[in-house]
Length: 305
Image 1: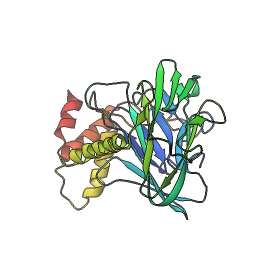
Image 2: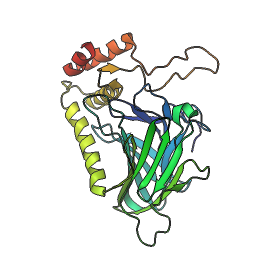
Image 3: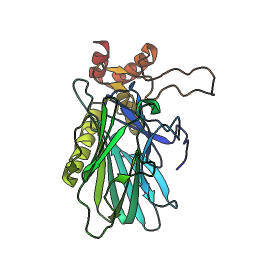
Image 4: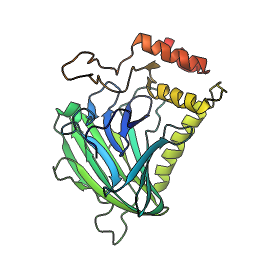
């Protein structure tokens, strides 16, 4: 695990009210909830020791990883390749339409298309930029973190297989304030977890429910892209750029943020330490102008309302 991956070595996922950054080793190292400008839950992007992170990866070091989006969607796919098999972590946030809400879901779906792979999960949230202590309760269905009015629930998927020892069992991490779990998946198998804010008690999700969330999210993005009027030769790149602008838009107001992250200074103690998680009128105007040129009139209307 790289302590400080380059900002370019990340994918962006979101639900149109907040967003998360996922590094190429499938570590969520930036996530603020319930809004773009809320205090962080994961911020190891800025502080690898105290910021908090959420990692799911092979339980070994000799793997090669590649990251890409599934075609015409904002579903991120981190693929791991080892001598024993190929595993995938599909990362996405089910899109929220309508009014602002405190309930958000970060879904991580594990699949093994070839061979066998043992995944390990390390979940270490750090609330309010690492300033708030939290309480943790674990059950056979998942776990719940609570800190200063914020509740974060981990829902697990499926049942533990007989004879798999600690597989599928969520346990305390070594530090005692996080979670650790492992899954051994064989070819064709699927499992995963969903991390939900203000989502109540943990529960077991069925594999079909997990796949349903995946299908609904993929369908939303494909339907949204179908509204584009662009027909040029660079459609794939233009569509990906348009989705990025959409992911950075706070749907309840229609306003795009300047960036999903806080200010990342050029040097410690230097200038330009601004917080980019707000709408800058100049930058937002350029973004809306681009979307309008692609036929997205609803986005322009929402921003001007």
